[in-house]
Image (cartoon, rainbow over all chains, first blue to last red; front, top):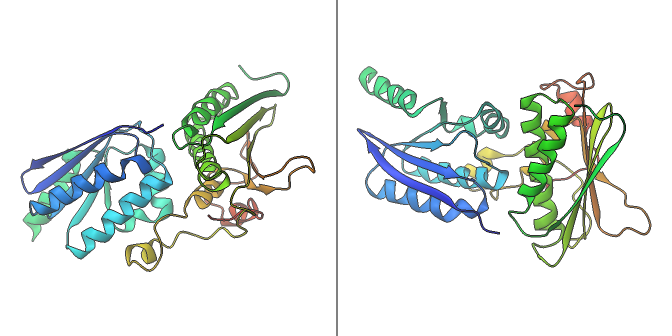
Length: 121
Length: 169
């Protein structure tokens, strides 16, 4: 009973946005990793994972994201996450994922954060 | 509409990842009928998803010929959830560790092993229970009280006492 997820990559200035539509479970591993590798191959330094608020995320999906965090640290990339429901924001904090990826309500908020830091620098 | 007496819903799902979503939807319906808050319903949905996923992956080796049984019992005070699997991987784990995300990120720990920890944090009681003599396999029980007077969201003492039989696959 495989579950489909739609993953797409788009550029927003200096930021790469990976849009995730569908369940983030073990079935999403290949699609998420391909999108991340594609963004990295294009030189992405700031990557936003944009979730759809009501989709299902389980611990296997979180493990996939931790794998991305591992790769991103090696490449000195900044990860941000947007669109998460309050419930999944809580889960991400619970497991410690927010130590490695900033949470923002929307993509625009994440872009403002990145651009604000760039201006400050 | 709150139930007047015990209401029992029993599901038998194939041991195949993805079918845990059926349990997730069923428990959401029951929890709504018990007037749990929206956030608590989300907690329960996540907890049952993780428990069923464990039952599928570890309790029956993702063998779709096997079944995972989910029994939801709703009464005036609580929602009681029992998940039975064939016990294909032997005895369930004993300890529930806090996920070592730093170790995972540094490549020192394998990715995963977070399910039971998440469950323990989200429900009032959780842990493996002893099966009846004529019942083989593992049984994992979770209880969520309608009035949260036994545990606050951030009480480490309460969460630690709620899962003393559990373990982290």
